[in-house]
Image (cartoon, rainbow, N blue to C red; front, side, top):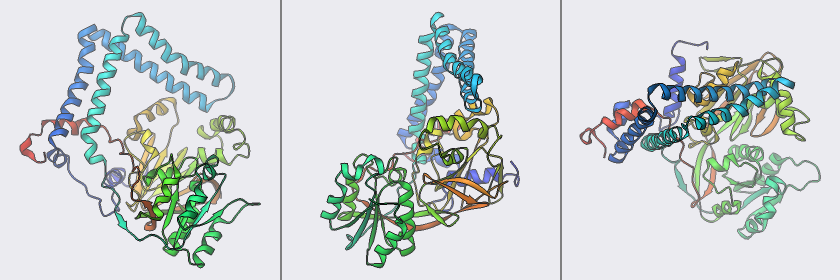
Length: 471
């Protein structure tokens, strides 16, 4: 990856420390271990003991050679499964069907081999021990992985709240949960996006503010939330997010109740304010992320809305193999990523622990953009993505600005789930503390992110005595 020597390491430190916000701070591993509580030290010891047992139990039960064989067979099965998935995504016709067969049969063959040799119990015991080690290790490291919560500000109830509701969003949640009636009972003016024809949501919000609205609220998808968020930030009025969309990623990261969107209305009479960042792409606001590359190109297809699975399978081979679609170049300060198949730029960073952690952001007030770039050219590199943020095929950066260029004048972009086509180069920036968000005082909260498993740090924590600090 071109760039100044050591640049990627510098950005990695920024990513891990939340640099760009007032909580950004880098500490040494010794200081982290020294601050560990008694419980953390014992959890670290349990993790190390369980990990060692996961290795020693098979050795004691079946011997060194058999243990090596078990591991090699398991790794081979995993590699073949990952390769089969990759080939299935990058090929069509008979090759795809053969790849699917390989991906399905590989784990089954491994299971049969283990069972026939009476080794299945050994594998299961080792798996359980390893699971205990990972769970204990993450619990021990959890203190440094969980940032302090976003600061809340006590505020009086709004006098003239104005809420925009999309009755079709989320399969009809506005009607299902009686959101209009409940909001009006709390003194809000409600505008329903019932048509006929499309409604200019941004203009609706601007008119409401001009008429004296002191709070804007949205019950709809993240794309609609982003449009109204831009108007709220522009006029410095708070935004009320109502989790009536399909995925509600923004509501998740605000700690709102996604199962019962009516609870979001509690913010109208007992709410607090969060001051969060807002992302902008080519001047358009986004609350979650902007996606480039394979996914953004697929959702542009006219056939995608009618048959998502078939359209994705038809277009992915050419996009992943580089045979179609624009060639992207992602730049963040002095770091350049050439030719990624997919890029995700987010308003603040997604979790760094593993691929599953990319579903949420613990903070929205760090003052940075996050960027994930996926560059995969082989089945081996695709299998490497299983290692999450430590994979060579997955590059993670953080900064205040990200620029995406291409070898075409325009590129498809997905902005908070909305399919757009933008002129290149596409500039993404973050505006720190741009948006006031009104949330209920009592809400589920943001789930704690999974920490990165760092065995070296666990060992230091486990060997640190009570006299070294903490606990």
